[in-house]
Amino acid sequence: MAKVLVIVPFPMDDDNLSKRKAQLNAVKLGEGIEFDFKPVRIAPVNYVSQQDSVLADVGILEAGLQAEKDGYDAVCIDTMSDSGMSALRSVLDIPVIGPGRHSMLLALTLGEKFSILAMWDRWRHLYTKTIAELGLQHKCASLRSAGLQPNNQSLLAGKEDEFFPALYEAAMRCIEEDGADVIILGSTTMHEAHAYLAERLPVPIINPGPLTYRLADAAIKLKLAHSRISYPSPSHVAADRLAEMGQIAAGL
Image (cartoon, rainbow, N blue to C red; front, top):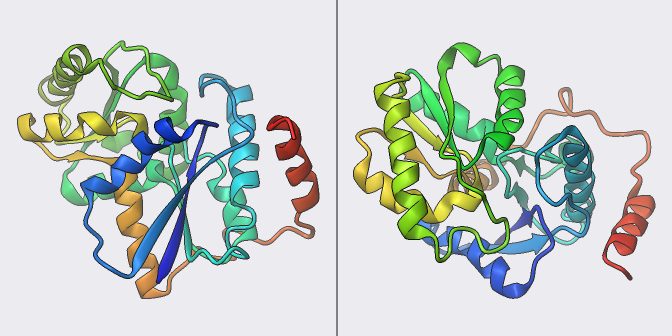
């Protein structure tokens, strides 16, 4: 049985964690693989500044540092920011997959230009960073926000009647005004809107969280992982210091 660790980028209770686990319903992987969802202990309130990005990297690194020793065969990161992905790749030999860059690369196998559909403008810096790293500025038709306040705990629950049509309207502007032929959901917190949008939009729309589960399954079966040339191992893994930081953050 292959095991995949999904790192959830915020501390949360079991009820809110179940809303993250619901992403598994969007992809059928069959028998032989299981997924464990683990919230981080160190995290910002939201991902709206460079300070937040540093905290996110540290928190996800701390949460996934022992994944290989704990018997996991791959790690998925449950945030479009890909926070902690590079750091974890430097210390783990198993595949570490972030949805941000992989969604963009998949989009270019489905069309010529993609747009990222976000909840609000304050996430924009997360996407521009990855787009710049991949050199895909000329392939990104737009970054559009629906102007909605996200909730990283309860997600879209109870707001479907307001949020889903607003997201649809913004997505159609990406297509009709910006020239996108593929849409990417800008956050895994938006996964509950995917089915609604996929039924109504005239172009493919990528659901980033389930995509990472499929890619993890493929990487495990193909025995592939990241390159050590691109992600060299550190001279010393700061496991003890990170664990202490996690205990302090959790109030232990």
